[in-house]
Image 1 (cartoon, helix red, strand yellow):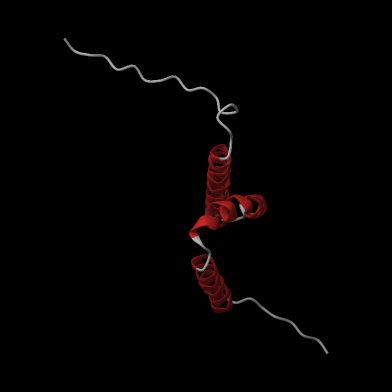
Image 2 (tube, one colour; image 1 turned 120 degrees about the vertical axis):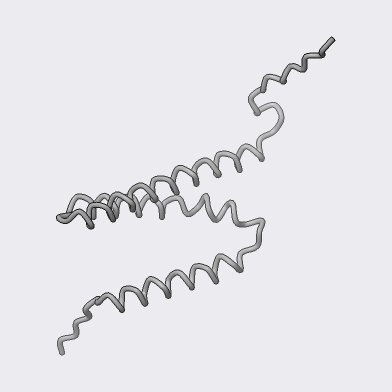
Length: 112
């Protein structure tokens, strides 16, 4: 028995929409207190997007394929950088007062 599946445009669109809806429903049911750890824990997914975008970009033959690969790398890198910034900020909330770096207090000048 030979079974093959071909991914046509409509099937790919259906899979994309189904994945988007499933992600929206799943993330919508996550309690607000878990959103930051969930986002910081998913940074590896953005790394996979960057690698996939680079793979697409390296194999691109047409300008459309090059544009799609470039956008994938750009968005994946932006998501990964933002996720790491959120993680760093979240971890800073749990540091004790002694471990936090001292910040310079702003100087207030009185007029007169």
